[in-house]
Amino acid sequence: MDAKDQPMENASQPATEGVTPTKEMKKMRLLVPLGIGALVIIALAAFFLVRFLEKRSENMHKVAVLTPAPQTNGVLLVTGENPPFVSENIPGNGFATEIIRAVFAEMNTPVTIKFYPWSRDELLVKNGEAFAAFPYAITPERAKTFSFSDTFAITSSRLFYYKRNKSDFTFTTFTDLKNYRIGAVSGYFYVEALKNAGVPYDLSDNEETALQKLVAGRVDLIGLDYTPGLELIKKKFPDQVANFGTLDKTLNKPEDGELRLLVSKNYKGSAELLNNFNAALKRIVAKGIYTKILTDHQKLETSIVNH
Image (tube, rainbow, N blue to C red; front, side):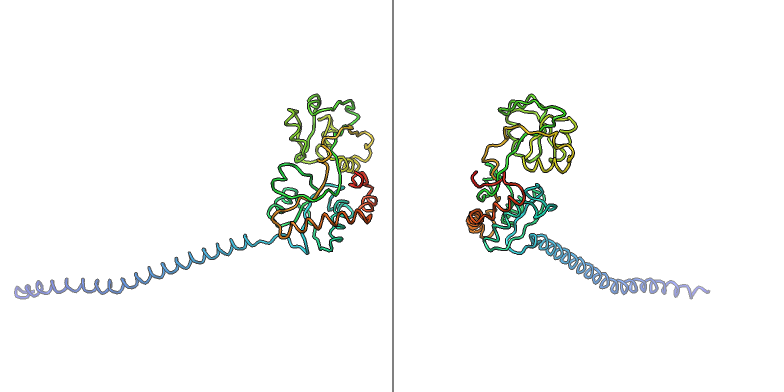
């Protein structure tokens, strides 16, 4: 290449450098809208995702809130396991259940009776999802929250002992029980009385466990409702019934053994239903229906008649 051509090369160099920015700018002009579009799409997707999740959460909340109470035909009553008064596993679901059904038949009112744990029974009644639970005794604490029907059966709580272990006891007041190993059952009213008297006790979750401790000699006395206690002994220890005994003095005052409906204050029409129930109970007693039920079940000792 000669000397005169050299300036031409130099002159052409700036022109070549000027083309490169122009292409980059074209690329940027293309990329910027694409980037903005992508951001818009991402933002819209996020927005709709959030709305979807919010809507789903609202629907789930509605489902939780609107979960219905137990399906019923007529008035709902609830109860639990306490044979022979109430049980899913005995004829007629227990004599107390038969009494309740007879009262509602006298009222000409359809009724559904469902079995649940006792804690759920009370919650359903408290919330107004069930009209009543049974059988219950009045306590000052319960009276703060619930109403009660007239008495439809009588029971008493007694101290049971196992003769092969020990049978010589003195029980005049609760403080006398400090001399013995006492077995108690969770949920029984007398637990509070034992605490107040300073009597140590071995607490069981249920009656069967308490009986097993008694037979094993781990406790000297256990407190049970009299009629259900005898039924449980016959069922669990049929060959040893004669080895069990009870103290004459009851753990409860007479009024504490009066069994009633535990009635909701929040159930629709509960006040009218309660009045009708009490009136119908009197009628089935007068007609002899009440006594026949107890006679059929051999439970006349629980009768409110002439009590």
